[in-house]
Amino acid sequence: MEILLQEFISKTLEEINEGLPGGYIIEGTIDFEVSLTTSTNKSGKVEIKVISGGLEKGNELVQNVYFSVINELEKKRSEKNSADTIFKYIEKGLKKINTISEKSGKVKTTKNRN
Image (cartoon, rainbow, N blue to C red; front, side, top):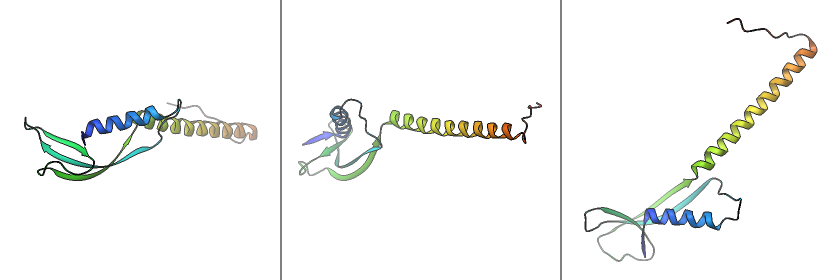
């Protein structure tokens, strides 16, 4: 059986997402290892197909390909959450330093002269 690479990736990701219970997401990457054939169709366009089993045609090249995909929206959301957390800790730390400084009376805040 052969299937076009783009169809294979799309269908695999679709099936994985549909198989997840509500509220669950894939964290990180989904790794693929596939064997591919390349051939030229009747119109001269190169086709890349995922194969399973043996080859049907003798003029195809077989390539093993390794790659990963990541959900870009989840990656951005995760990065934003990490940055937000860091900023919250910095803000808390600065407030604590300011409170300690004001209580000790040793440090006075100055206004920006610009």
